Length: 369
Image (cartoon, rainbow, N blue to C red; front, side, top):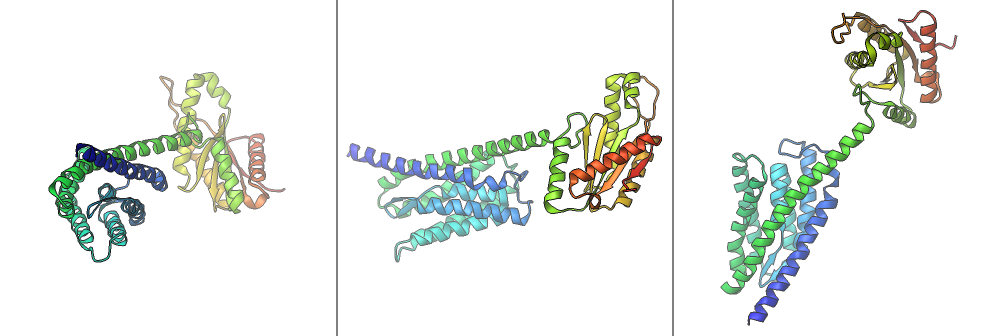
């Protein structure tokens, strides 16, 4: 009898382990669409919460279809999917997951055996209502998540008792069920947290690879990628190439630290003066580029003049030195003046050269003449 009991427990344990592996594997692949979402919550967009609910609902369907059958009970980790959906996405995500669970449970129901489906509905509804009340007083920590999992277990145990043949059978399945639900909830929460940290780390590294370390503007790689994107989609744009006049004398007078201060303050000025849709970047050394989508050349020249005047009025301050001024030479060109974005940048560079050759501290728009 003891060997039979041990063998039964081992079978249940192995079946639950398969359900557990299915949960973790599904989480790994199913939540990839949310890797760029900063944080999913009840205040996220409806679209995000619906998508989150569909993903959690799909996972719950897989769990139910691969549930452990014991007497009349169908046992699996569906509660973990339901609590996860509601914990992060609120009623919208939880409701969609609830529909998935009930639909899957109904699909595997034996003819005439409605008890399991009815109990599933009662457990899920009771859990969602209780979770919505508890949510008002929680701080959304792992402790709160596990408390909701525990509440779900407490609601499920009476149903397990009703669906098992004897009290002894109930105790056998109850032990395995509680262990795996708690373990599944704990691992799911930690897994999602680590997955979020990993995606954030990768995103940060990608942003750093496209950011100039001194000015926090776009670097040359980012500018080149943006120009290639403009070419690919035939976007109209204008470009400003901004160069600091006599920057070498700034470095000679104030040192390279003083030159870095000028570059950082100028980068802030460029961002302040440029429209929100503009891409502002450092092209190298004391040269900056401003990409202006859907802006004709005459407006770009006017913007360049605004930048030039703002810089001329700017008081640059470094260490104990008196405030000083720097001026800018700016070249401008637009996408209708070249077949490729590379040609447009070349023509803006030619305009910049002309501005320097004709006295500096001016804006020159490209002209074939």
